[in-house]
Length: 114
Length: 111
Image (cartoon, rainbow over all chains, first blue to last red; front, side, top):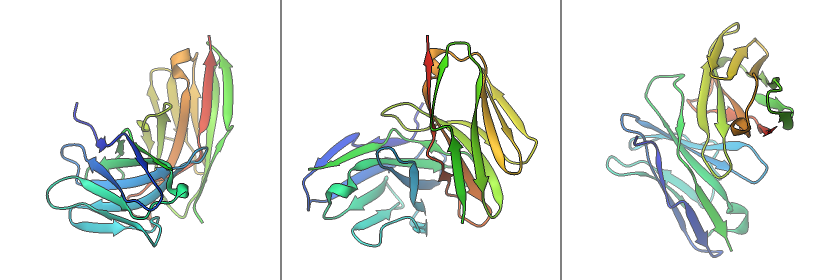
């Protein structure tokens, strides 16, 4: 059962380093979403992508954060110059093209900034 | 502004003690309401999607219902393995395909 694959599962970075989080969607899914979950908070939408297109990045911080979903390969969420406040669980989800379809989430990447 | 509120924040039940979780929402136009289950350290697991008031869906001990203002997740005769955080999310007509989540209800079922 090839679900949404995220790696790494755990990532430790020192302040100022870059973090790269990868997400491979489910087979047949062309839409990818990134969410962030802070301790004791709900899932917050960050960005919605299709192949080679950013559809909605309204939840993405304006600086240091970027996302891509290239024609080949996984979607990448990149955080430059990480700070302690970036420590969180980052979840990727994918869905088929039709509107109203349910998402399938990956197991997440837990980022710790030390 | 779109808003999703879940209550209670936490719920402890004895095994076999049925109860309901609430998700109230205020959105500009509802395209769908989603229920997920999340276990500690894992990603959310899809349970149900409801699209219109009056709709109901069931899966094992869980039943989800939808009105124009809120959704309920009814848990009948819960077991310890039902312990998890239950998340409600909405997809709106005006937004893109993204989901807007509530903060969840943390359910503990005691043997």
